Image 1 (cartoon, rainbow, N blue to C red):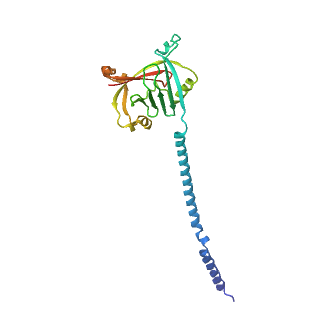
Image 2: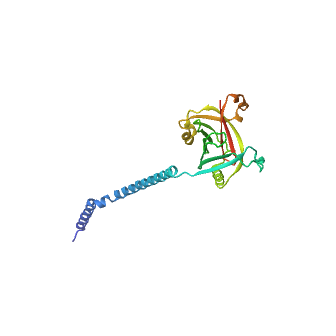
Image 3: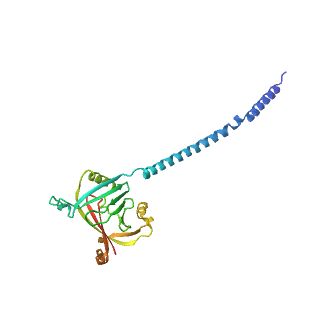
Amino acid sequence: MVKIAFNAALAQKALGKEEAAAVKDPELASAPVSSEGSTGRCLLTLLGIAFILSGLIVGGACLYRYFTPKRLYHGAIQFGDRSPMGLVESQPYYLPRVEEEVEISDNMAVISVPPPRFRAGDPANILHDFNRKLTAYLDLTRRTCFVIPLNTSVVLPPQDLIDLFSQLMSGSYRSYLVHEDLVVTERIEDLKLLGSHIRRLCKGKETYRMERRADLPDGGIQKRSAEECFTIHHFANKFVTETNICTA
């Protein structure tokens, strides 16, 4: 009579050998751990690649913005000191002329006004910041900055400015003159409040805040005799603006 216990013992012994072999086999023993580690490494690699790509995109945008050639527009307008209704063919053949160069972007326009020819006026750089709704005048003769809220009834938005200068570059243009009286009110000590564009324009220069004379009490008439004024002829619309800036 054969006992089954012998076969069971052999089976247990064989099973024990298989388990021991499985434990001794490094590939089998480390298989689950290796799978988890590979997943973690893949995630870290993907995150690293995404970080590098985002850095390349941002860096490329900055390089494109600061190192590509700037698009400049040049334009000139002849003007008569009359209203639009009065600007007719009876105007003299020769009219005063304003020339300027402008750099236009989505949020800013920088206008360079050269010294005028055969008439009174001052050279200036004028910056219109459409995001902060501010305009800065840098008087190049006095090396002084003057800042005032952007006058949207005078200054065209960027795309309209591009359209205007595209027309001016293709031929002559006749228009009329608009007068603007601005009065200096106080000095600005902290240029950071004006934004990065105006801060760069006015860095190292005395900078003052201005208001329109019509917005002052009594129109500022009582101070006119003690004021020192200068004039800038420029345009950011289909007409020329004569800006008088007066300081007490």
